Amino acid sequence: QVQLVESGGGLVQAGGSLRLSCTTSGNAFRIVTMGWYRRAPGKERELVAAITSTGSTNYADSVKDRFTISRDNAKNTVYLQMNSLKPEDAAVYYCNRRPPYNTWGQGTQVTVSS
Image 1 (cartoon, rainbow, N blue to C red):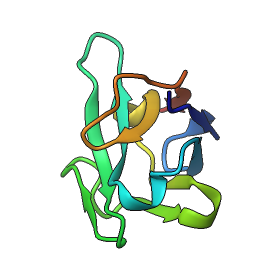
Image 2: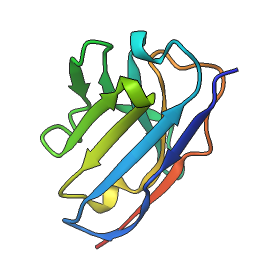
Image 3: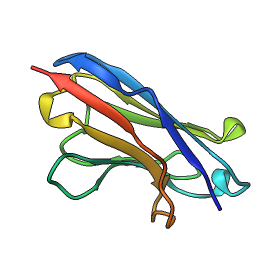
Image 4: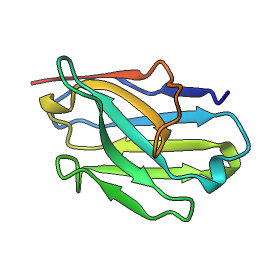
């Protein structure tokens, strides 16, 4: 069973930045598309960014030009650089394959103060 461990969240003021990391287990990491998802209170989990095995990326409109997803296949790790954070970015952030595995990590909390 794949394991997903997210880190890097925290409290930041609006306009600030955070860098999230997610390390996964298993040998398939380098060939799968990975994504960062988030779930805000009272909302459904949504995909905010994804990166293919070859490095192509796509983003939700709400984070485009502010967030950057990247990956290091040698480390089985995917990153999310978040700049110009807004209060509406506050959520628990998760990484997973796209489409997601049945299992999820614990996520990492991002809080943005206005």
